[in-house]
Image (cartoon, rainbow, N blue to C red; front, side, top):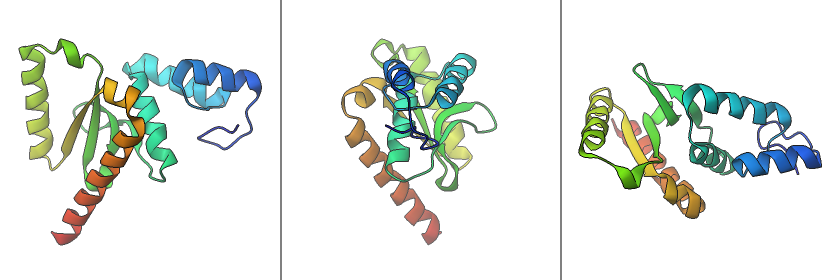
Length: 147
């Protein structure tokens, strides 16, 4: 058992605390960093799980990246891909849907693609979600090379 960030060997207690909190293996230093991030940015747990799922697959996403207007849950800035986790997806009102659409429009106007992923998708289908995001990222990277 090692920390997914620093590869430090985990104690039983560190492993247990991180798994109970986030479902990922983190040392006390990185768990504390995630705790602080969640308090400051209201980061959903699913964003942390997806972030580490993407890291496990060999890519380097950014967690809580500032895009100039707001903090984005996960981002790949080189391909201009922003990922937002919708934790309240089933209770979406028309006002929230319109706000999401406007945010997506502003992102597109600045050259960014925004994916909105329901938290249930990460909770139950993390590996498939990671694979699809990697495919989207590669497609965006290929299109950037063409331009």
